[in-house]
Length: 57
Length: 350
Image (cartoon, rainbow over all chains, first blue to last red; front, top):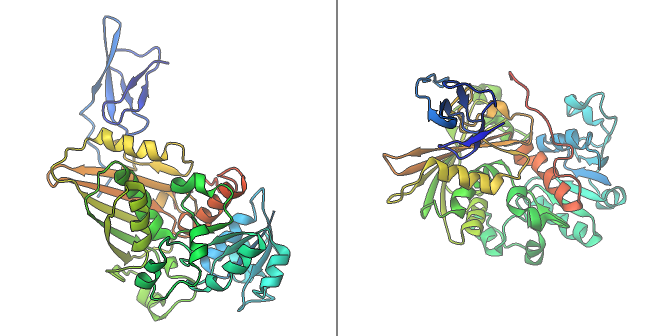
């Protein structure tokens, strides 16, 4: 399973080997969510900004 | 190895019994209580009914030495001074949960506790029982001075910053603690009608355990750091939550720097979890998810506007801040797996 570094905390973010362009993955350590972008076989993580839920008060 | 708990009728004494009863390397051989001698321990600690038929015995040095390879002292502060010299001389491994042997500098006892320490030679021989920061020193230790919940929370959440020069000359720490932190004896303010729904400070300045946090931060950072510490009593039975405020004016700190600081210090520590999550229910540490366990959850946030790092620590004051940490340190000292008897998964919901 390939992994890419989380840009926020530096942890490895595992990406499923059959991942498709546009899939959402999250960092196991800090929870930052990413959109997987695949261009010409190159895989990149783009931070997903759409999730704003906050369970705090 | 046979273990004895001296002062086993208090809350931390009871938690020691609970942990030792399922420890794979230690046999619970005796539990002392002057007040309850002869009584079954489950009459004082009802959660232990069905798990042991042990009875409390008189706290006599001879009886304890006869039955022990390891002794835990869960006594009021000051009383271990009567036990430790003789236990140390006998060669048994002693884990002292009082403050009597925690401070390296004998003069600090005059300032913080108001007495001249009678055994400065033993202070030099004791190892501060904070496993994450003293793991190597603990190996083979014969006298372990096990810290309490406030010093543990304050020290563990700030040490990674201290080690990387991210603390100024003064750091502010607030802590909230449940009623069990006041012990099992109780005074008028511990009556249900006074304690329920309480949110109030106590000893808001010059709390004695500041000395330990400052001692440990100085050790990690190599310089003096003052701790402005204020504890608060809150409406919990168990648990302590601490918040630290470190001002870093003139210096830019990125979130990744903090992750590295905490990971490099605690990456190999089985009971430390770093909680700073952008997903899910728990975004920062919460006492709710550590109660009953030896886990300490640490977290942080950066306040760019004020040039401030905010740190958090959540743990069970009686386990991580008392009995569990003492057993963890003992495990390291005598060569048991560090996690022996302590690997509990926190219940949820609680």
